[in-house]
Image 1 (cartoon, rainbow, N blue to C red):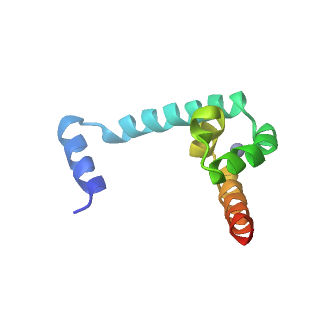
Image 2 (image 1 turned 90 degrees about the horizontal axis):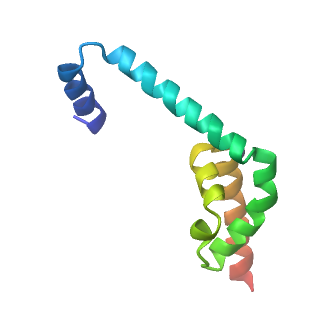
Length: 97
Ligand SMILES: [Zn+2]
């Protein structure tokens, strides 16, 4: 049994209407995601992604220095893909030196 199933069982035991609960939670997270994206839209994000990845490769504390970028990466799969690709390229170029 995986964690999700256990969680589902516990939830069903304590909440007679789990479907409604889920819907509320999902709506809340979607709202949160929207607010975060408005804080830092994707196009603005891209302009800072280079710097963020560069810091990370040089083992500087990118997450602490640029927390908004990290937050955006956590909730935006598009930018996260971009970030992984960029990180990959930069790591390889660093190794070639
Ligand atoms: Zn994004």
